[in-house]
Image (cartoon, rainbow, N blue to C red):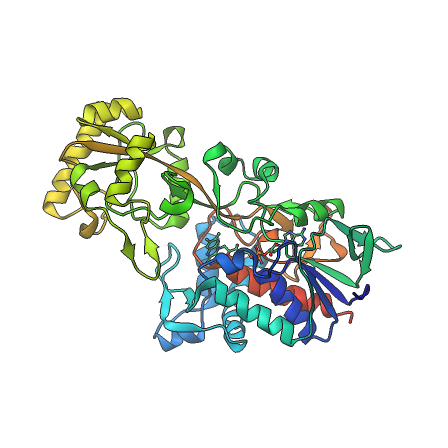
Length: 459
Ligand SMILES: Cc1cc2nc3c(=O)[nH]c(=O)nc-3n(C[C@H](O)[C@H](O)[C@H](O)COP(=O)(O)OP(=O)(O)OC[C@H]3O[C@@H](n4cnc5c(N)ncnc54)[C@H](O)[C@@H]3O)c2cc1C
């Protein structure tokens, strides 16, 4: 293999392949290295939703939206505790990112534009054939652009030239030089040590923690960046989905008919609230605990629902009985006993259940206004209780601090010469609140494009 390129990209997921294609489009000779056997990373395992405002598909659907409206929404939701210039870039370039994905053959359809956040505007655009098709489209384009690809190559060291700039990588003692390096190594969900250091709210779930992304995402980009003088941002941020953890990830979509209470026996949320907010709401309860309650009638009727994929696969009537036998689901003949065994205040639970049942009978949720189709009374014994925890790691958001040009910044706020980054390996775009489904893929494509353009510039 050649040992000198214009641009080296570490990681062939969504961000890395986007950056590589863009650098090649801009005339650079590009090498992409990936630790895995195939390209795609977590991007290939994702739903492929991209969040963007003011898009051509929104217009076709009659949705009047602008990047400005998205910017105001995101900054307000985050109480302005977010890097405004990154968020502005994210909002301004979202529509172009979607158009670009479509231009390289990734299919998005008007009917798959949906409300993906806690906002009221449909900004989620789901890829017709999910994340696998996004990754395939990028892989195809990358090959068409003549990018050199080296798989099963884990990079753990950056190379510096005599003037201290990042000027390549070192792999198994061999130096491959370049004018710029783009770190696109994804998150660090597969590394327990970094999870404990940078995402303690997730790590405290211990053995119950479930990671659903690429196993090769061990945070190497963060470690290499720190060695090169980079700084990190976004401590304890990411996306954790709540789950009963019966059997690892299979039950991470929870049925809307559950009744959630905290240790005080009080209902505290609409059980169908967006997954983007559920982690924070559960975390704010006494002891960070949420107990899902249901009765025998709900159990017996529980079945898989198939939309674009099977949902509630772990919440099937027979399986629920297996969890009781395995000890992960509590069952009791009375609500008092259920409360005692699950550590919930019994008298308050009785009041909560009475109020909830009255709302179910009236087909009107007078407390959290959940759709009436999800209202199932808790009346017929035996009763069940499952502990719901934010334990499914979908994305981590502590990462290399970049500016809007995708340059990695040091502690003095100066770009580390020669070093760029994009995607989940960076922090700053995904903030305290994971504001909507689709923001990670958008982050990949938007900052992957910017990193590719700027890294190729000297070439
Ligand atoms: C089940 C699931 C569904 C999701 N659905 C969505 C969705 O619909 N929309 C959305 O926006 N987000 C979604 N996400 C999150 C999103 O998929 C990821 O955050 C995003 O795809 C990350 O892209 P990336 O390019 O930064 O990293 P990845 O796609 O993970 O790519 C990183 C690559 O870097 C490689 N790598 C790592 N370390 C090294 C090293 N040292 N040397 C060489 N290579 C290395 C890895 O092998 C990997 O191929 C989902 C996540 C999951 C788990």
